[in-house]
Length: 405
Ligand code: LMR
Image 1 (cartoon, rainbow, N blue to C red):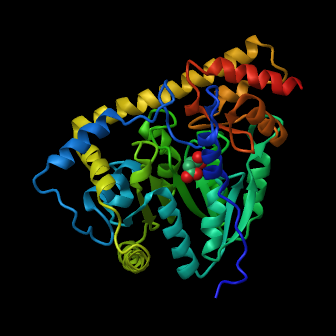
Image 2 (image 1 turned 90 degrees about the horizontal axis):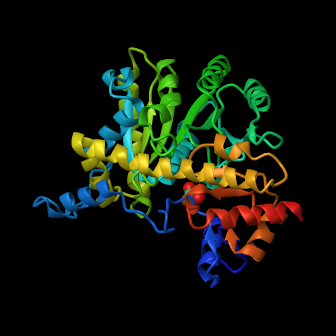
Image 3 (image 1 turned 120 degrees about the horizontal axis):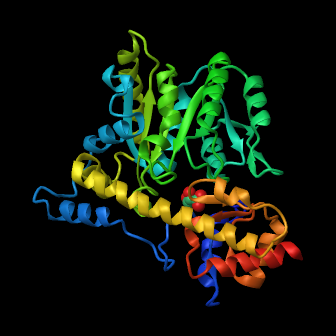
């Protein structure tokens, strides 16, 4: 049946990870995959996650039974509160349907499938140019067509505001618009709150459908409310919208695949009933794809989110991660300035979250890999978490050398 199947390319990011692992140089630096590392370049289990893990493991009621199709209720309800805010009118008015998913990827996929099957008005999703590479295949795989809105301005390494807004103004009404709620991947460039307000106004006027991907709440600024501000603002403006929420980065639960998909209906007397109907269809989709979501990571996240003392500790852990990344941005920037490296590097400190879009070209990226054993994606994205006090000078020197060539 598969005689004529073509060889597919290796996933660029996981391919890069394998190449890094295979490199035997003791100088090697991994600035590829977006996963937090401590100052020793090692994965970090959040202290609060260690505690929650013990609580879950030692709970006499712990078992490996199936979760309900919609997932662990104590996770999905806390996840909705986290992203929408405890006082959310949408939650009070019961117009939110929440489903546990296979992390953010699964949440994007469930949303994609839901749009492909039930959205009568549009099968087009606009993603930022650039966006997380996986967005393209997640949405295309279910038959949606992808359009792009300009996002990154090469000259300033900042937001292409005119490009973005004029593209949204010209988008077909009812198109779905994928928005990164905070810590845009791969650029690290976020709209300001005033810009978000204008984006919301344009989207309202053009009847565009917001689909938020939030993979870095609390991780970007260290402030959970601030990182969800855009979503909460859109909900206040009365949009019908969807949210893909990941707990991979902010809990360091990468391999546990804990996340949630939320559908929020626009306020109306029919909203509660509509939400129930949506939830019933999401249940069918979930059942046919994964039956029910995985239990362990969900329990860990739920334990933290529902316990006020652990929640406070989590905020501290988020502060440790975001604080170290901000310190590394500053260190890299200062070293490049000290070396008088040609070009401007302000964007390293003004960009936010896990990534920085350095502006290095593909040729420079490949050279830096070859000569210095520093690994980053071909688009010049670096994962800031790969930098530490021991390698930041080495990386700055490598950048300096490469841009002077
Ligand atoms: C990344 O962009 O590096 C992460 O979000 C990991 C992934 O799954 O792509």
